[in-house]
Image (cartoon, rainbow, N blue to C red):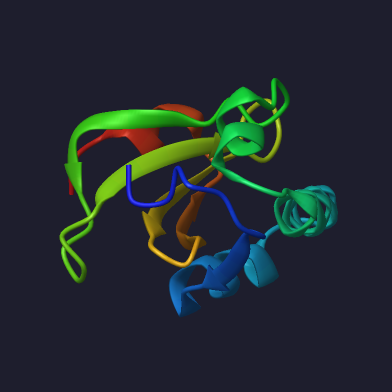
Length: 108
């Protein structure tokens, strides 16, 4: 894990994530904004992994092609998932947003 040592969580948003949020219906945009605020309020990786609402989990066999980092899934709504990676810093990078829960877990 690149940042188990703690530190205020920083959030980066990739253009694909942002574009998908903006193209989504209002309830998804609101939920994404709430999740972003929640992520920014976290103090360390322990809070990220233990927060029951986020359901933050490793996607086994999924690697972010740009950074080579492990990919993770986190819940935006019951049916919407974000795909993210963790960078040192500590930084969580929101890579993509999937409004169809099942498609979020398919390899590209």
